[in-house]
Length: 520
Picture 1: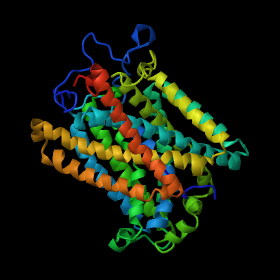
Picture 2 (picture 1 turned 90 degrees about the horizontal axis):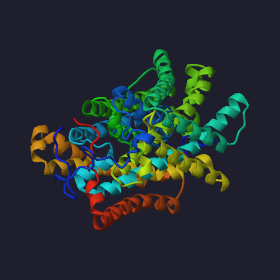
Picture 3 (picture 1 turned 30 degrees about the horizontal axis):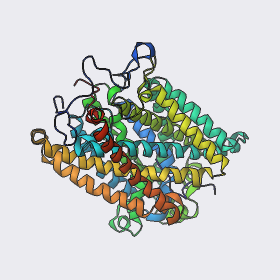
């Protein structure tokens, strides 16, 4: 989840394990009598995460919560309408269709991936170990950047909401550090508890938007309901390129379904179902809510309202159609929406660390699993300390919590995740080109057409975001280009580390991307 700069500112079983570089058969990192690197031994807890506890719905809650639907709609949609016009709902719908195309190849390859490293595992099996470790490093950087930057937004909105509604005027860093503590505690406890908390928060934040949408429908909008948002001349307006960039950023988080493979029940079915469900929900929900907000003000007035007051557009509509009480509730739920997203990204980050540690590609401590809660608790502490340090540093240097700490830290993460999605799409194609029997069984559409088309379209989406990064950072090229440069530098650093491992620690290199977390 990311917000634009002006949006809410203060005013299959049996598949071969891949070899060192080509994806052909190679050694497995685990087996009978062989402990994973993340093993903690009998004194400190089990070597594995708690398995079989997450169903499809639980995983959907995690990944949709990461997208923070309420914050995206109240903060991003008005800005997108101001920039791209009343055809903005179609941008969200088109993005959902493109990502569903990506999911076709992604979920087809899931049957052949028993590793919980998500992007890392897919890219390693498809493009080789150097690219895989580059993807792993980029994923860790990107998710950390998104999550840690989000503490700035959380602190800002918690500060203003508590001050306005409760008269409690605490500095934003205090709220941000409280958020770090809550996220750490929930991440430390069992994944099942986290799923329940996220489920409740997600239902609340989507529920308040549905209350507004129903009120608009019942009253017939400002001037009667119409479908002008879907008219071609409104869809293909000049500003839709930038809006598409914003809409792709609004879906970030859905791809993390694969990271929960070890904790999922029947992962070969659960992970694909959760991936499709998350994309379908986000695409249809975003499209419907943005259409409703256009109807709330009328096709002729919506753009003017969004341009004049993008941060207040949803609050104004909520007050007019539902009441002031709902507006106050919406402000509180934006804070809890951000908290849910922070927890979801925290879980993703700690599980990337766990997956890398089991293959000795990261410090072994990150693979330690709590003996009672079954969580990667050392990784959770490390990630939370990193976030707390970043908040303290931002406060000490006087960074604006929203316009600088959130937007600038968040933006390279958004670019990084889009690059990883494109790499994953290319990896699917490459994997099935080498595994012809599996490709023939799945069919050309799933193994060639869909992944290639998705890769091309995701590359285009990445280019759109880079082209209009000013929409995300509210800054000029002197800030934006260094932020973009972080992405290739981190990826190439991971590639260099893999090549160094191949030369100096070939046994560790051969293990990359080969550990299995389910027996199929």
